[in-house]
Image (tube, helix red, strand yellow):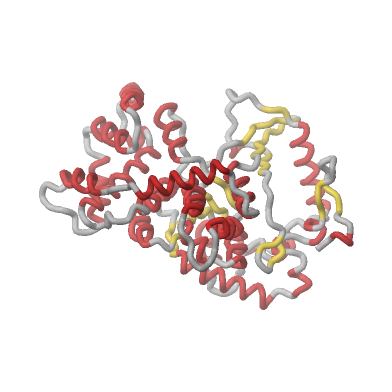
Length: 433
């Protein structure tokens, strides 16, 4: 785990497997639904250099973070919860918003168990070159829809906001967006924003009625996540109308949508020029934008550092044994990001403090988790449980034991498997790789 990070396809494509391993090791990667869709759409993309679309998608799926990653809830679901039900969307701390957890209770202790998400399951299949017919159809529909995107109409419509002349810089556009969302007539702003993000007329009436009953507060206080999404869309359309963003690239629509998830990370990384141009305008003080090429270079330095400085006998114990924290020496970008976003005391920790897989501490922890998982009873849905207040959070997932040249876990972990009873047992020596 590490700073929460959102990446786009351009960043992951640039990494080799060794770099992808360190990427996964030192960040809590927030995998957005956009990345899943963007990757899937490659099944309908023409591929050069003799590779099939299935090979391209499979290669990207293998690089996708699997150990320290979470799939974020779709922004439409978040908008619906906030607009129609008043659900509070946590945006201040840059944490992924995930779903699918079952609240459980055992012996006075509470916990949440998360099963593997459909997106995570799909990536595992794609790594093996297995694609469902439905996924292939979705890829084709997405590619066709993207080819039909046309910004010309919005280019003309949004010029009405420039009666005295077009903005000359993106910074001017952002200042106008901030001014507009804060004007006294908040009802008009809310109505306009709801229409822009695609809320139906009936839905608009429902939300406006809820807003009036709430005391007619500012939309930023009433629906802060909606305000963020609306501001992103409004900024984009104004920038196109001002000829500050080109309107000839349909893929801009995908690139823009990544910003809907910006509140749920502390680090955003991309090699995309549009992201580099507009993401900084929407960052909080506790967030940074990093070019994907800059991060890739640092991951390559980390790979070289560990390869040269870690003895082979230590490497065999797995990355988890010697790289629980990034290096405290040198000028690594990853270490600087840990300084900025992680506990200020992380540099004081020693690797020896990490529980080993066969230690008494580790055995006791695993046994407690096993008992909770097998014996806990579900908590009724009406009894809301916040993840910050529970005793246990269990995430079930499949993880590569080795990525690139690096073994991630010690032999006693790698050389185990589930038997017919679902119990883990040692693999016989003659079957071990």
